Every structure is written in C-alpha cells, then in structure tokens.
Amino acid sequence: MWLSMRSTVLTSVLLAGMVVGSAAAATATTAVRDEAPRVADGPGASLVLTTQWLSNGNTKAAILNCDPTDGSTHADPQAACDALKDVNADFAALPDTNRPCTYNYDPVVVTVKGDWYGEYVTYREQFSNQCVAIVSSNDVFGF
Image (tube, rainbow, N blue to C red; front, top):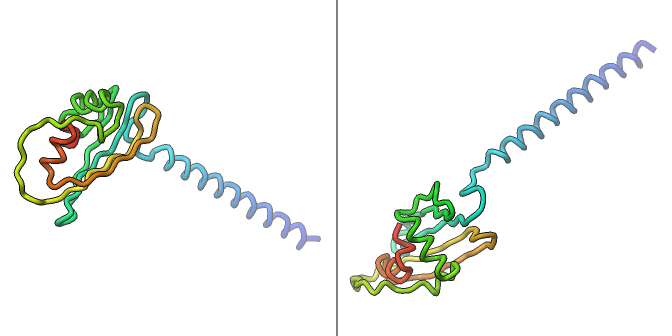
C-alpha cells in the first residue's frame, strides 16, 4: 500500500509539473506570436518594396505604409501612396515620368508584396537599370 500511495503521489507531482510546463510553453509561444513584427497595424496599406541588382545580388528594401504613412521607410511615402491610389495599386499602370536615364545596362528586379486596403498584392518586374525602374514607376521605386 505504501508503495502504491507513493507511486500515486509521484505520478501526480510529475503530471502537475508537465501541465505547468506545458502552460508555460504555451504562454511563451503566445508571447512570441504576439510580439512578431508587423509592417503596419490598422486600416490602409502596408507594402514591402525591393530592388535587387542582378549583377551582384545586392538588394535594398523599403516599407511603404499608406493611411497613415507612419512607419514607412520609403523616401517619399505620401507621393508613392498617392501614385498607387491613382492606379489602385496596379503597378504596371503607373505612368512613366519621362525623365531621361542613362543607357548603362545594370538590370534590376523590383518586387512588391503586401496588403493594399484589404487585398493581398504582389508585383515583380525586371528593368534595364535602377533609373528606368524609378522613372517607369512614377517614382514609387525611388526609395
């Protein structure tokens, strides 16, 4: 009887430890999930724009938040947001600014991923150089 009672107490302690340990692990997981970085909270748009040079693989990126533009790392978030609103985030429809660019061939690939007022958007296009990417996108890729 003593052995069976001792065994029951030991089993109860182990189970309690497992429950407490599991609860602590679940809390830690929730805390990590709650603290995961977000590009933007609330209404509006939140996009990540990148430019990658094909010659060397270098990449630069910017965050573009619209309504509000708080937290944007884009050089001119308000102008970029306004340009995108004019075409409802149809990047291929952005007007060319008709500024001259050099003819050097240094191809870049630009990408966009994110939320545009509740719709997930993606875009990818290759340009002959960074200047052409900026001019062809109404300066949206000028970050």
